[in-house]
Length: 467
Image (cartoon, rainbow, N blue to C red):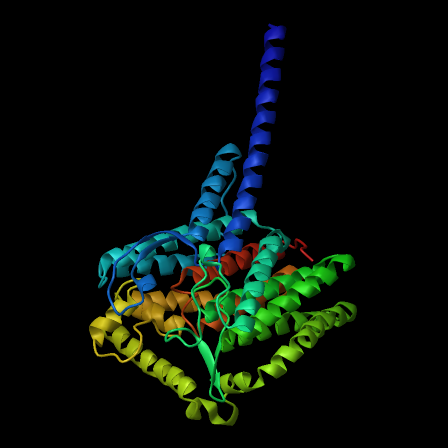
């Protein structure tokens, strides 16, 4: 009898060890899949596209597309579910002031799908949103340190920035079409350029769909690299300084004003936090990082000064430069039409992801490209109705209100400030462009920012240190 019990105990211990080993392997694979997802975020590389042409609407607004990042994100979620099965644990729903409004957005996205002008398209986007919500919960429950995402972010910045710089210096694509690079020539209609002194200059695309998207990805990534610089050993800072400077140059060549602004505000918040905490030595080191990147940028900035002036309304370029005048005027007209579309269906919306189709139906004679408004909140209102927009508004402001209300209970470590800086950057972009709401790369960065912030905020409230 004793021998039988001993054998049973040995078998039980062996099985437990095997389960722990398998759980460890699955967790490692899950982290690797997360790294792959983050690295692939900017790439427009897709493995499947079901065409649903509605000319002249841009096909990516109407087609069903499976991106490389989608596949790896789904793999991440599958592996996470498997790890939960191997090692059961409670799923935290995170700070409810953020999770509940996000759930509200999903609910009214579902309702909008039922009344959508294109039900199939809205259902496609709803499935995407549900997968992103799963990604949010994964980040919230499994990421307890921002350093876990720094490697893929750094790799993303390196590849995208090198590609961007070579594109602008050569004024053409560099032959990476197998990775999704677009064919680029500044003389072609539809290719994004800056125009000054009678010269058309190509804006950097990297491996993305548009310079604005590349700019956003680099802006968000630079904030996390700056955090890594602040929290790593001194011997690694030289490498991170070079990477940061390269990323700044790539960001500059996108000529994306919204991305420039979001990076400036996010990085400023990191610096102000150092000052308020009285960490003078770290602040001096951080300012050295910023100064080094600006020094490296200086010759390129001076060489492109006329283009910078045009983008910043020097000498009234918004009114005088035909290219900039059209871009500004188009956004004003687009926002006005978006407001009219919202007023026509204020409670149900026109359907998640269906704004370009609704614009075509509302204004078939619209003289510009059929695209979403360049204010995310306005797009959310038009697509999901008043209550969807209300919940999105709560998502924007509730984190900052929570930080203020719980300021005496929070540990204001570097991770919390970096996650908040990232959240600020994605929010700022949303006031000037729509890709954090509609397009794959922007959406992934937005949900990544929400998930990382929720995870780090929860840990900081429990007085855990990430600095």
